[in-house]
Length: 331
Image 1 (cartoon, rainbow, N blue to C red):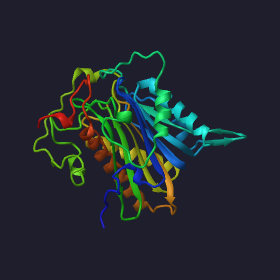
Image 2: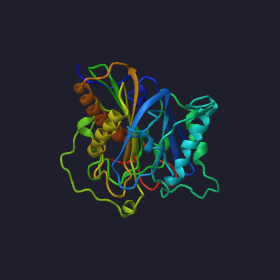
Image 3: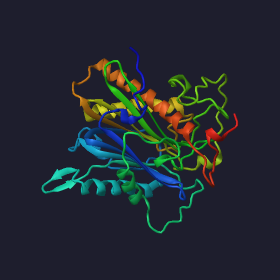
Image 4: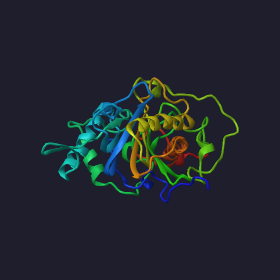
């Protein structure tokens, strides 16, 4: 039996996880929230040279708090870190969070991407991201849209609009693995001028066009606008229903970065803040043997590559876009 996508082909095929998106079309930015029905174990690994994060230190295996309530991906560069505050407020209001005496403190790590120069109106007087975070939390669901939504609303790549992507696999071991990603890379998701995706060898069916592998791999041309320091970043989450420790989640996040390298060329550059969270719900209670852990990691990288291509494939045009969409190009 081979691995196949879950029913939705989304990260929410991992039981107990839901995703919410909120966006501001005028500002061309947004927020995506991954919420667990119950707290889940999480880890993180950063490979880009320009990351922006909140509460990632507590995900190290030697830290006291081993589980989190939600993970947040946001646009807005450093302003977007405030999105997690909106999520934390919403969770506290419903009694979620780490118990400290008579108080509840929601644990909500987050990461941001830079979308401040994408043609949207960023002339705000009050930071909008806390409100967007709360809106995204209020909209969590098992099913959600891809492309120009949530944290992927204003995302771009070297030559096309980026977006929000997701994919999943159900393994022969019975474990489910999924990926969620906001693609705002310095690099390109397509070979040359397209239309073929770098991730084509990992495509299942026609989830991003079914075009197959390009016949030639030309040199990637990066526009000067994308070479600005700190002006990019692809951020994502991989998840599984396996019972993993924090250390194993950190390893899962590390391995999943292979998906970035398979789908974006170049990736992990000094001008990207590439980061991946890993989440384990533990709803499949038995601890996986080493062979299953290996395959969960391999599946996470494959799901991430597919999710990246699906993000770009699903992006839709909007007013004042800085770059065209894959879907709008005349290939």
